[in-house]
Image 1 (cartoon, helix red, strand yellow):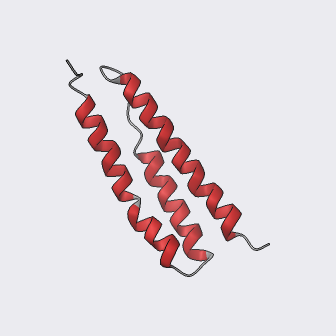
Image 2 (cartoon, rainbow, N blue to C red):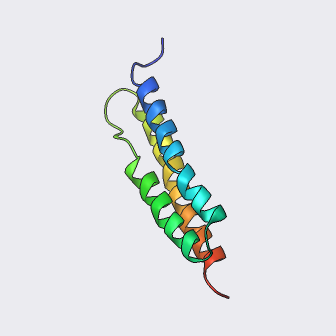
Length: 87
């Protein structure tokens, strides 16, 4: 039997992924490097804000989803500095 908190945790993760779409579109269609830097700050903030509590049932799943979100936040900032800063 699956844990009762698996569904809500996965839905929360899916919402965080969807909230990053406007920032991705801004990074792709906006005027570089400003659009990329703004998108990176917004995208990483959404990732950081989307982390979930690891207490209670489903804590293992929450830890793994939090790790993915932290890696995404790092990827946003890294992309902004690698691609957005003048050489």
